[in-house]
Image 1 (cartoon, rainbow, N blue to C red):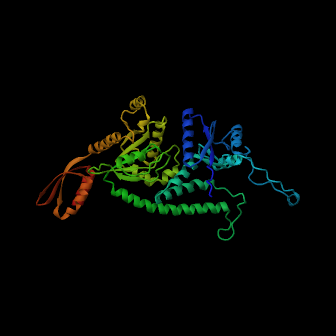
Image 2 (image 1 turned 180 degrees about the vertical axis):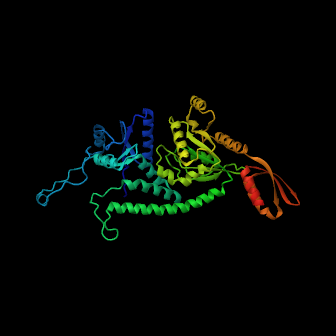
Image 3 (image 1 turned 60 degrees about the horizontal axis):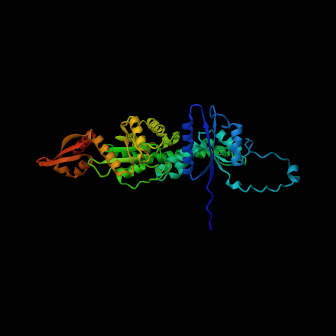
Length: 445
């Protein structure tokens, strides 16, 4: 009978620098814990230390490092990874030592140390030697989550590129020696060869991703004159729940970080004329790796090309303002900060009356709602429609009898208020956005 492998165990490590207050530091560690649990690891301890910076070779002081090593079963000392040299005579006559019995609970010692900062390759190597555990930094955890959650071909290509860019500078020679290669590529070390393979694979992935993104760009271009709303915001703020409520679609909804990596586009329900498209985008997070932001350019372009952004924020989270700042920072990075936007404070079913009043006082223009309350979702729908209505104009079009096949396009792009007929064709009184009406006129010319 197959046995279920034990859940990997991890210890979290936080470094509090002078520019970070206690509340922000604790919130960051708590978020890291949720990231680690999303990977399926069990968090069994947390160690934190106040330091002037994070540039030291060991990151931690000797006392805190000893505490961490006691948890993981390490020595607490950074020694050489190479075995001590032995003479042939010593190897011949040395009596083999009987291996010591493992401690009864040795198998349950944490096998991972997760650090709430981005680490250099040498810092990772030193911490691994001192703790005897595998070390991941915050970026490594996020990249691994993206790797596990990518479903579509585009997302898988994007994540593999980001993952290789993360791994490349952290490669190291194997403990077996990493000698020179023989044959093709002779003169290259194993490390050089591995790095060349990564460069070649990155080039191949870029070509594949460019082809996939050209298709995505074409699909977005076809929707350019349509009314588009993009849901953006911090991971796990409830964007997918709101997407499902607004569109009636069966998008994935899970209470974990980065459940959604692929952009989903659906029609606002009940359907309007002209119809409104709603897109759900990848969530943001503090210290989202730049390579992931770059790789997900196509996905984030939904926000860049939207007519209206809805900043979805978990209003019940004490750190919601910091999360909103992160979301705005990422959108600035891709140039989407100029797109019209509205703030949506979600999960109000978890906030009491006093909390709601405080939120409204601080953000008087915000939309307060719960994605699980139909009346709240209906009010948001009305707000979206009213926003687009304010930009629409009335006009008249003549659809020649020879081009009656275009009537579907007219109904898709504008609201038809009335129809009459004369000797030239069908005369339509319409209401729509100026850009959409101009495109219709070009089609009918």
